[in-house]
Length: 221
Image 1 (cartoon, rainbow, N blue to C red):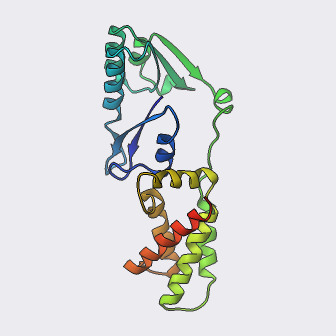
Image 2: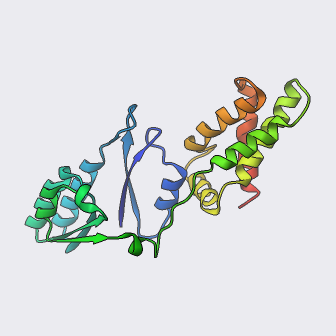
């Protein structure tokens, strides 16, 4: 299986992407997310892989979960090598898949909500965790640097306690190829901790925040 996504922070994968990459028989391919939040470079990766796998006769059939017309050329060339391409869509796929791509495919299939619920569920955003962490830190009296460090520790620990099992596993997978706090979690923690202490974190406070995060996550592994 080939899984395509965009890298939010350059070429570094997120915790979820690292977890996917660590699965058996799954190949992670990353494009990038530009400054406008647009995913770029993914279609070309799909097209290239389809052509190469077909040319090398590594596949006889390909199941493609996509709707972008830009991958149609990959479908056409793969078919020229004898590969049958089966287009899979998520209901209502007629509104999200290119008609030209659907016509080009050898077969088309649509999965509805009932089918998807058998193996996939929606993970709720951790907004409540963020609120609890901030509220708990704000209730700590005292002032000064020692207070800030203690507040940051409470905030980070509360945040980590609210992460789900898959979140923790994702961080562990991220650490197999990288170090520190994953970018998407670092971006959440910085403003949360800043709000908790009532100002921008200093360099030493940022180091403390990140060290506390790593310690708290390791305690759950």
